[in-house]
Length: 121
Picture 1 (tube, rainbow, N blue to C red):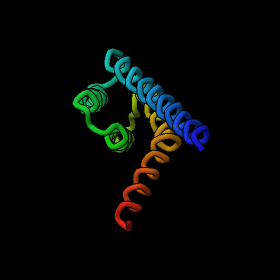
Picture 2 (tube, helix red, strand yellow):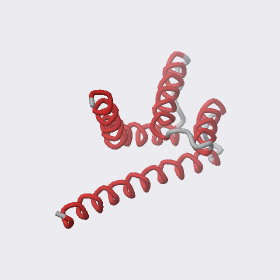
Picture 3 (cartoon, rainbow, N blue to C red):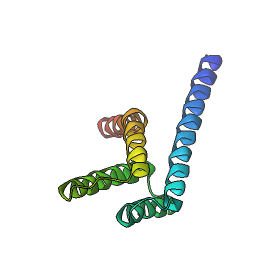
Picture 4 (tube, rainbow, N blue to C red):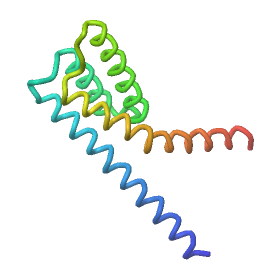
């Protein structure tokens, strides 16, 4: 029984470490984009706001969802003007979108299940 508990806790710890490594990679990409002279001012403002929110210890998943939404809106605005997101930001947006769909979505579902089980207990 103790061995089974250890394996489960070790597995959860490894998953948490992997998720944190992926979050760190997203933040490194964000920092690099902020230093990139090829991105537009509006894109830089959104990325800077995202970085500051994370540095102020806000929830990563909510802040990432907000950044994703804001980049979508900016992309639509640029589409009306017959422009598009800059290439580096477009690549970052695609990777962030993929990360959110695969990693953060599962994390949010788990949080919701835990909260729901607490309500019904």
